[in-house]
Amino acid sequence: MPAILGALAVVLTVAEFMLPPLSLPALPGIRLGLANVAIIFAIRRCSLKTAVFVAAIKLFASALLSGTVSGFLFSAAGTLLSFLAMVILVRTLGDAVGETGVSVAGAFMHNVGQSAVSLFLFGSAVLYYLPFLFFSSVITGIVTGTAAHFALLAADKSKFTVKN
Image (cartoon, rainbow, N blue to C red; front, side, top):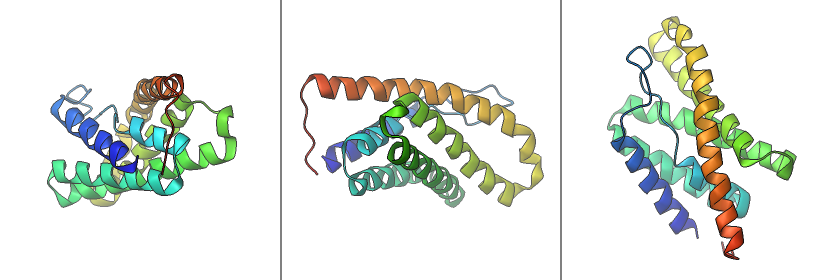
């Protein structure tokens, strides 16, 4: 199962890098975060070890596709904070929070992580961009969370069982 979800995360990452960013020229770099579908699935249905593996595979795929050290830093900070937020939400609130809520929290924290790196590298000029990033995290989190919800429903309907 880890290999399948890791491969799915890579495929979704590659597909997303092939799409143009969802932004206006004044708001560069906004993406859906489609690989989080595989990560949320792993967090909900697999062991923590498997979920960490899937997140790590997604991180390295993103880093390789960006091709820069700064791209890796942005991706690492965003992935780490996003993953931690999603795991903490699921571990503390369980089914009380749906996949959409988990995804929005993950998207928000991903933007926090990337903004922190940007603040460190480029200074305070990035602060004007934060409201747009945080608003976009709600929209992208809803899209990705909805996709994760339907992936989990499909797995449940098919009586899919997870073996770690």
